[in-house]
Length: 278
Image 1 (cartoon, helix red, strand yellow):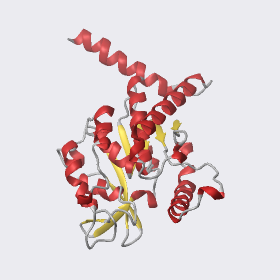
Image 2 (cartoon, helix red, strand yellow; image 1 turned 30 degrees about the vertical axis):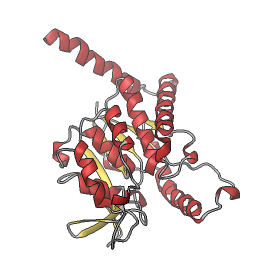
Image 3 (cartoon, one colour; image 1 turned 90 degrees about the vertical axis):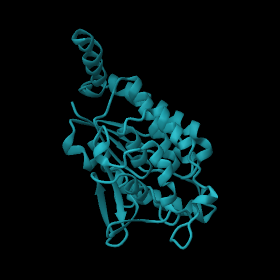
Image 4 (cartoon, one colour; image 1 turned 135 degrees about the vertical axis):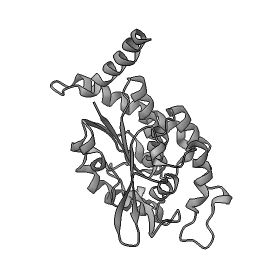
């Protein structure tokens, strides 16, 4: 069976995706197709390249987003997106979609014509940087005739990119949408971020029904877009939420239990038949 994994954007909250990957790995569930936006695109690319969850976590722990060397000069953003190319290249040695071990689909927003662009072939790293370029913070990335920024602006939960290709879909959405209090909106930044999430969530919620298993890590409202000091906490919340969602799926009557059966089939073919053939 072909299993799709959809990873939303969410800034530093995207580290929760790595915890989900750990839980899936422990349950013997190995997605065959990946779709992602922004932070989800980066996690998805590393996973599709063959990196395990430990190495992906290492990528983020060694990423110094606000290093003075990354500040932009004469560009529309505080941080120069292209400065992160070298760090990604250490993990994605082959800068190509075709060299990935799993099909990957990511989105970015073309600021010139206001359309969503799907990247699936050709060079890999610059589209990743474009997909994760939060407007106003990171500079847009020019790719051929387009000028691209955060894919989440128009498609923060790109389940539609792989739904026709897969038998079942696992979705992971890391943006919070709990009700807030006036006291939570004291600063212009918090108002801007809240407005941004309202915009993203309205379009994303309708797509949750397309997923056979939906994972929404808890307490994401406690972390900002760039909460890099909370990496271990966010990772653990993703891991725990994934385990809970998988357990609930197994207990749900008449759910078809396809997700839980993936691990059993994978184990049987790789462990048992593999030994017999050897």
